[in-house]
Image 1 (cartoon, rainbow, N blue to C red):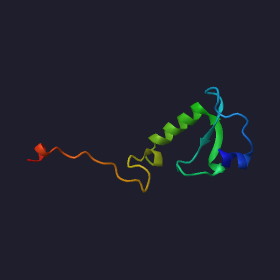
Image 2 (image 1 turned 90 degrees about the horizontal axis):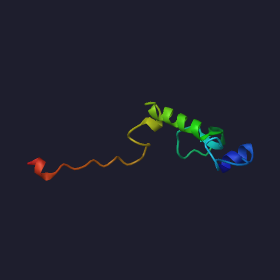
Image 3 (image 1 turned 30 degrees about the vertical axis):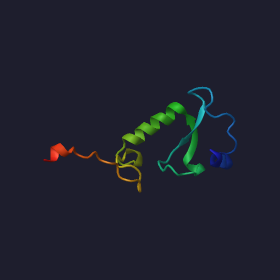
Image 4 (image 1 turned 180 degrees about the horizontal axis):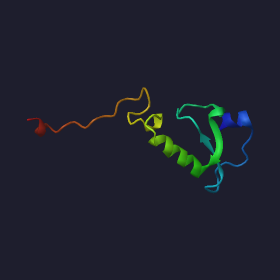
Length: 85
């Protein structure tokens, strides 16, 4: 939010009172991105809709069930010893 305000100016009131208030919507799917060019003002409902559309896209990093690059692999449950005999 600070990067956005430095690039485009102060946001007077951001998401305090309801669903129609302005919120900062991030347009890229990289969690560490701080670029003000990848953010825009929108509403909570629009932001949520866009997120779910990107999450359902298999080509999107949000749709990758393996997780972000470099993250440890999820732990698989071990089979019970009685099943191995």
